[in-house]
Image (cartoon, rainbow, N blue to C red):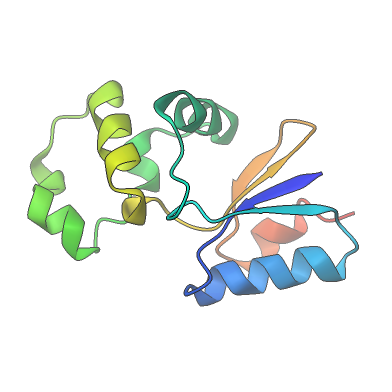
Length: 116
């Protein structure tokens, strides 16, 4: 089973979802803007990605600028709380597999690493 944190308005997210379904993957779609992750879920995903919350933050989003994230101290728990409260800031699509792999599938090559 593969889970995609999906934003249907994002072309990269739509492309990743299409590629996964075309490869006969069983896909669960998580519309993370409608169903934001909990802090524990986001922390787990970050660990699986091998990244920190600021690494997956969309810094060009207007909300990031409103919050002054460019100058925000790099405190993991604080950044996770910010992302949970503002899921629009989370980079997309995040693809998670049952075997523990995770990627931010913004390009075809990264996504291919998860395809059979």
